[in-house]
Amino acid sequence: MSNQELTFGDEEFIVSKTDLGGKITYGNALFIAMSGYSESELINKPHNILRHEDMPAIVFKLLWARIKEGKEIFAYVKNKTKDGDYYWVFAHVTPSFDTNRKISNYHSVRRKPTEKALDIIKPLYATLLQKEKNGGIAASEAALNQILKDKGLSYDEFILSL
Image (cartoon, rainbow, N blue to C red; front, side, top):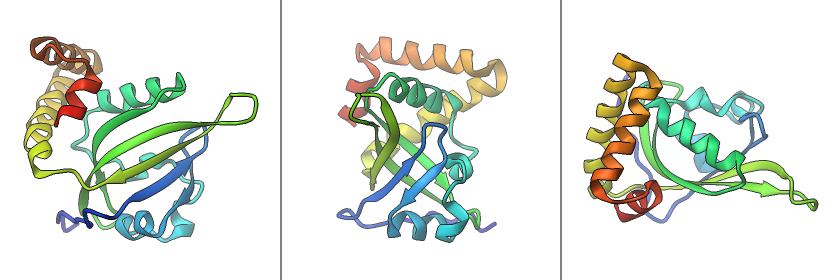
């Protein structure tokens, strides 16, 4: 476990698709390269194979609730590689629909986050994670809601303002 931060180019995009249960069905070359896994190690595996322990669960609760409703969401995510390194992404996650307008899968396009955004997100996530460790996801959710209320912003307004 080297715990080194990896980065990718400002003009590059990490793309993946999952089925309705969150299993990876597609990853572009950059997704595979950044993960440290081979394509065969990723396909049909849960996307949370990349979940970093520094990520507060409330972020994923919010993400899954939103996309299951058929809505898009933007989120900052710290992913863990196979070797224990990590990389930050600014993710845009959307549901895909079949011809009957039923959700058929999920699609995520990730780009490199700005340092300015991470300077805000890193301490926020550390706070939320601490709340989760002490009081569970409900405590983390309450803390996030209070922070947003204090800022007078919705989640989307806050994330997109960074």
